[in-house]
Image 1 (cartoon, chains in turn brown, green):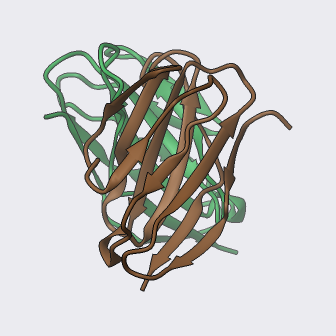
Image 2: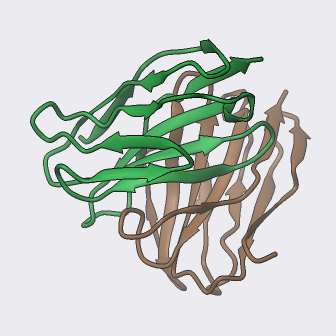
Length: 114
Length: 112
C-alpha cells in the first residue's frame, strides 16, 4: 500500500551512539516532517522539508539532523544520542504544507536511549 | 506562538454513551483545525478538519465545529463504540507556515 514507511520500528541505543531513522514515502509529496511523541506533550515538530534540498527547523531541533536529497526520502539523524531523546518518532508527509493538506503519518519508531 | 489545549484524559465511557473532548486554541492568524486519531500501535490518522470559522467537520459519526468566538473545536460523538477506543489529538496549522501544533492527546476507552 502507498504511504509513509519508517524503519526501524524499535531501536535501543547507548548514550553517545549515533543512528539514523529512515522515512520514505511513495506519494510524491513535497512536504515531509519528523515529530516526536512524548507522554503528556502530544507531538512536537523536530524538522521539516518542503522539497528536495530544502529543510528547516521545527520546535525541538536540537540533537537532530536531517537532509532531503530526494523527494521520497527524509532521514533523521541522531549524532550523539542522549536519554532525553527516548521517545516515539513519527514521520509525516503532505502534498502541500502542514496545514493546506492532510498529513499522512508513518507507523512510528520507538527509540530508547540508555 | 500558536498552541492547542485539549481536555486531559483518560476518558472511560460505556458503549453508546455521548462523547465530548474539549479543545481550545490560541493563534495569531486564521488556522485550520484538525482532529487526528491514533489507534494502538499505529500512526496518527486524520479524523476530521475545518478550515474556517463556523465550518463543521464530520467523519464516522464524529463532529467538531470551528468556533472563532470561543476559540474552540470540541469533538463530539452521539454514541461511542468499543472500536472508538484510541487517543485523540486536536491540532492546528496556519496555511502560511509548515508547523502543525498538536494538543497533548486524550485517551478514550469505551467499555462494552
